[in-house]
Image 1 (spheres, rainbow, N blue to C red):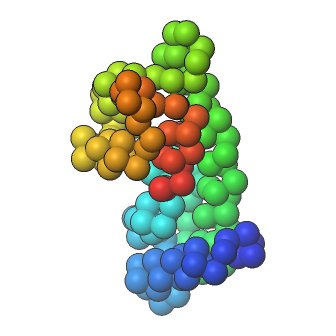
Image 2: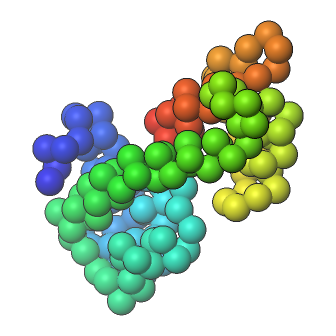
Length: 144
């Protein structure tokens, strides 16, 4: 499974595992914290689905969990794009930056204003204050 990750990603996973594991294993809250540190932003219930609290894993098991999460991210990105389409009233692939800021800071998995500011800095905000939500979604998921 580790072959799915490039060398830099493998090193990052190994570093997180080594830092947070005890006796070469991760379990319970430590496993949940390691998943959060190494992967996408997940809710507690999402973490529970891939790593129940009674789960204890070695490094290979941790990599398998992270590989499953990496595989499921593409579905999540597609779902986010579909959700943005609801706010794209004229179907041009753009959404007003102010409206997107409101959505990200008040609905669903709430982001901090600083996180949104950082995403907006990295996103290609057009002169008219519009964001291409497909590009923005890719940016969001590439940072997780």
